[in-house]
Amino acid sequence: MNIELRPLDEPNKEECLRLTVSKTQADYIAPNESSLAAAEEHADVARPFVICADGEAVGFVMFAVEPEYEDPNDRYWLWRFMIDERYQGRGYGKAALMKIIEYFKSIGAPNIRLSTKESNSGAIRLYKSAGFKPTGEIIDGETVFELDFE
Image: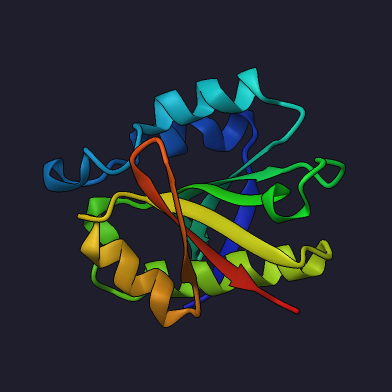
């Protein structure tokens, strides 16, 4: 399986908007339409990508990258991450997460942070399997996890 993160652009925007999670996961992640609106609103820090497997769009991810932010622990965030319901359970999420980690390392990030609801057990298992650890912080009712590279 060849996974790549393609920067969001006009040609792949429609593909991205067609990607959805199952109804049981809808409480855990905003629809991609909302994520794209957030990307436009926060264009100075948002970095949206379509996750492709062998050239086909299978998911969406968005980072918040703010290298000059005053708190060095809050500069690099995995803001949104989803795999379309049709592609779940096939290893795309794990493979995409490895690409995401590679991306952050390639830009010199010392860590990655993310937050998710405590009830999102599938995502938490995935993040923990990649080395993310809870920080003890809660933001907007979500547990913060961090993966340190140093």
